Amino acid sequence: MNNLPDAFHFKTEGRIMAAYCPGIQPVTSASIASDKLICSKPRSNNGPRVIIPPPTTVPSTLGHYLARRLVQIGVSDIFSVPGDSNLMLFDYFVAEKGLNLVGCCNELNAGYAADGYARRRGVGACAVTFTVGSLSLINSIAGAYSEDLPVICIVGGPNSNDYRSKKILHHTIGLPDFTQEFRCFQNVTCHQVIIDNLEDAQWQIDRAISKCLEESKPVYISICCNLVAIPHPSFSAQQLIPLSLSPKQSNQLCLKMAVEKASDLLNTAVKPVMIGGKKLRLAKAQAVFLELADACGYAVAVTPSAKGMFPENHPHFIGTYWGTISTAFCGETVEIADASIFIGATLDELETIGYSLTYKKNKAIIVEPNRVMFPNGSCFGLILMKDFLQALTKRLKPNLTAYENYRRIYIPESDPPQSELGEALRVNVLFKHIQKMLTNNMTVISETGDSWFHSQKLKLPKSCGYEIQLLYASIGWSLGATLGYAQAAPKERVVLCIGDGSFQMTPQDVSTMLRLGQNNIIFLINNGGYTIEVEIHDGPYNVIKNWDYTAIVDAMDNREGNCWTTKVHTEEELVNAIEIATGDRNDCLCFIEVIVHRDDTSKELLEFGSKIAAMGSRPSNLL
Image 1 (cartoon, one colour):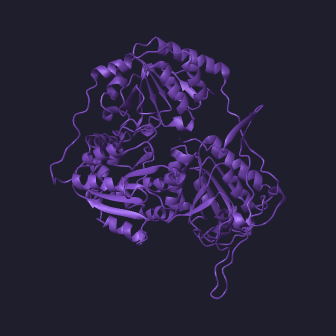
Image 2 (image 1 turned 90 degrees about the vertical axis):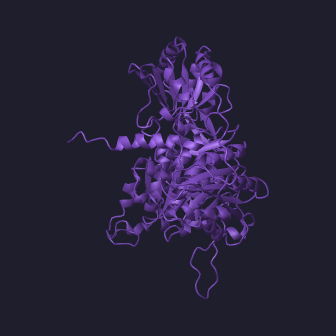
Image 3 (image 1 turned 180 degrees about the horizontal axis):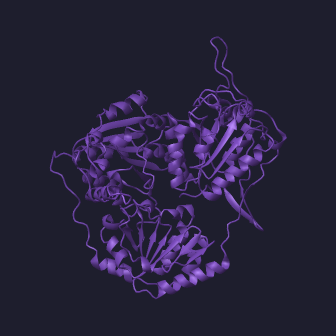
């Protein structure tokens, strides 16, 4: 689900791996819809609107070249905010066949949308203007970096003549130093480039895109605005040269030794288990992880960030391993196992509930995308996760003991929560009905907060997706990510679960969803504040001004008929709303505001809050 599109192939010739997209169709004036052309200059008071010509059949300028490269690697949507230094570049994006420029309400949401798009499509892109735009973007790019997402950040930069002029320009902090933006992005991208000449621009673009795809991290490309439309011979090749990606190969000796050591440990264990983590996506190892699970028969759990990366209808799936708030009986099964293999897990503070996991660390194998670590401290590097799992699959003996033990202690869930007629709606009742609503062509996106804990309990149907940002945990991320994910997967329906506090961070781009005709279902959980913060440390600052949320969304729609909104207070109203959203209103955006009590929280959030509060309030060891 999260790989690059079919048009993006890897072709191995000797030691060169090339990304190649054959059959790029020429662009003609007939192929460019008139409503996709935009002004290259502002419209004067009396003059006509100025329309740029469509691109030639082959790239001839920097603007042509970058647009064509993005299409080649599978980007069909760029999330953007216009500014004076990127307008001419945007002309080329708009005119490029197969490329859609999606205007967002602000740069932060444009970055979140590129994050969501990359999760589904395998690569995303956003484009903003110099400094004032890019520094607004940077928070969302930091989140994409934490999630190992390949996002291409394109910035329209100042005129190339200004870099050494010592002049002070607008959109700066008043100093003749234009490197502030560059230095900021060095911390949240794996590669940065400023294109201030045409001689090596092609190479610079290709190198940045290749780094983005190789390392699965964001990159930064700044392009001087006066260079975009200048023809140059380097852009005029009859066919784009395939992108050269550095070959990734395992050290065969290390691979053999690691597989032998791992198979010896696991094959001599009585009740081994396997746990998948979010870096399965980075390593593109989800399919081989499933093959290993099928072959060995171990009980299989995932960490919370990896939910949705392993089919939950698999016969040996036991749930989410999240310490004391794990899925029922999952934590016990993992922690009594006499051997475990963690594959792609990121054991950070939130994934481990304040580093409180009690699995047997002296019996645990840790598999990362490029190395394997063993409990005695030995580490084997230069081993690709996919290669290791494929080789290990052939060496492990089937062992169902841990799963059989899980089945012995497993007690089926009691009856789902019920409400009295007219009783105020509870959040656990809400998620009971979200569970019933889910189908295999849906994806759930869960916002920071109590939605984390309730959505982890959902049993995802086959092919139903799930996305979360747990490590960076930027509230408001999910709304922009929903915009991007839905744009990348138009045949799926995205279900967003977001609290009122998070929604107030990024509400503007619901209007972009409406403009694009997306049919997302948004459950806005209105409990009057930042509930997750309340459970960590309460205070008056956690209470927010209540909005008329449905009226705001209706105002964004502006009577165009692209959305349906409602407020629900009881289970009966909720059931009716879901029936409408999945029935008559299946083709439009549905916004359901769910009114719940301020103190309505999951038991998992209560425990999580106390653990994180304890971590934050530890006395300084410097005193």
